[in-house]
Image (tube, rainbow, N blue to C red):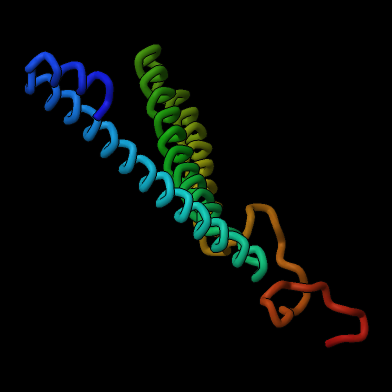
Length: 161
């Protein structure tokens, strides 16, 4: 028993001794739980590291990179068309609010605005779908090579077919 528990027991106050022992047991239990949780997290980090190393050895990007890339491309493919439509709606509202009498000029201008906004939105969607389907980094063109035994692409040699 600790000093505090002995002092409490010597004064005939058993409830204080029980409280002290209970408090020590509680903190010991919390310490054990924290140590076990830290060891578990270390094991998870070790397994994740081994997975990344294996992916690098096979010439593949790590799984987190694929998920992050797909998320980024999906956000671009969603937000750019929405912003383009918002700009078109805002321009339409401003043109109709300013001058309702000159409808011929406004319709011609609205056609141009909506063609540009639609073109931007369509190009963003098509570009993002193409990037998602292709799978490699955006802007990277595949080499005209062959895959080696590990699955990595190597540049073709002049004498090889």
